[in-house]
Image (cartoon, rainbow, N blue to C red; front, side, top):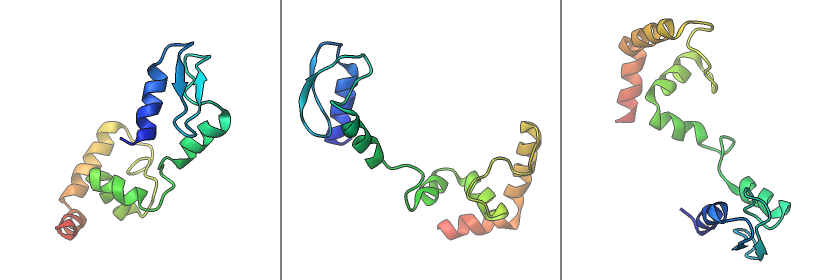
Length: 115
């Protein structure tokens, strides 16, 4: 956890009326609302725009390494966004089709590539 993140959490937990430190610019200010964590909108925007999200390079690779079934679906269907395996299916149908995919040759190739 970075210094900014620690300060942000500390600010979120502080009571209204407490003097807190802005995690971005370091300015001290009095907390006016229970949800306030930054001294101004500019600092809030700087903080949240600096955080990694799914638009950064390598997001899908990181996500796939933690969720093997999603990686398989992406390989099979060639999509970056997988909503469902085969369109509008019930969860049970979706699970049955996915179980079949796990038995396929594609699954073996993907897991061999990881090793």
